Length: 202
Image 1 (cartoon, rainbow, N blue to C red):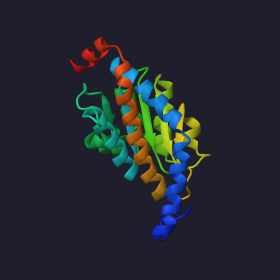
Image 2: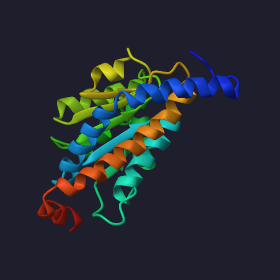
Image 3: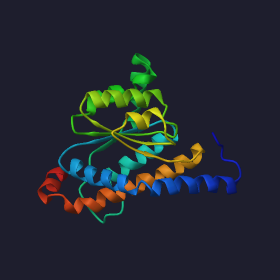
């Protein structure tokens, strides 16, 4: 696994990751289209990650509940599971760290919802446990990960894998993926039945 290294070396890793992301543009657009439909019909996005990936997952939910680039639109239901700090610490204390996200998925997730998990490695046990719980509860599992093969990408219904050897570059490219997903959601909202959007905004 490569480190940051010099700035020049890092930019090479970043370029590799961005090129791999560009090849997955159709996947991100399809996710945006489906998420626009699901969130407009009353479903919810749950998101989680660890460390820097947690920050990016929370960035995603903030853009959906608030707005990304659209001048105005109804708020969309999205929850960053790691931001529920009292729940997170209580679950970790009572049930162990592997269940900190899975138990929240059981509490908040409903069939048809989407669980989006972000990880630079794709090996985090708490995310894999959450993915298994989501699948058993009828949720879709999407993942933004580092290079394939990795267990999280394999466990997901849809995965965007950033092909770069440096975790730092993977994380930076994943922020671009988050923005691209938000843009796709807002781009496809105009195709949604206006009555569905009205119901979401109530």
